[in-house]
Image (cartoon, rainbow, N blue to C red):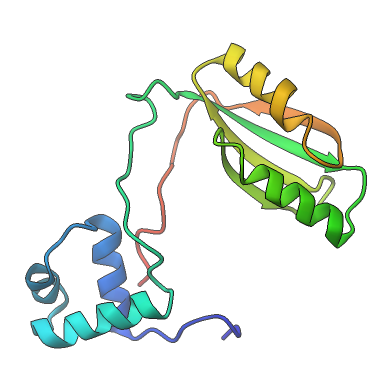
Length: 158
């Protein structure tokens, strides 16, 4: 087990699986679903929240219905990869709302980003005015998604 990994038993895993499907479920219904009484379920849930296993609750928005159906994946190569450069890049990325995900990669490039915009014109503007001007960017390569085949969060931890 990794240093930051939290030890989960079958009830904890069941709680996480149910909450990933329905984050608004009542404690009573959650307890019934996992096979425990209300008090121990509530205590386990509180512990999972306090330990940071559950980082929060949020609404899952439909990007298509919001007009954000243009998805591009961008490979980013940096001019340097010292910690100060990575830190500056990471902080700047966090301020760009169109960047839905950004991952430091071990491979032929440094970062992989998922960008979500309304259309190609909006994406080109984000690329030119925001991504290309990020600290230490040497070059980028864009791959436009044609269809989302699977796009979910962590739904089953059993």
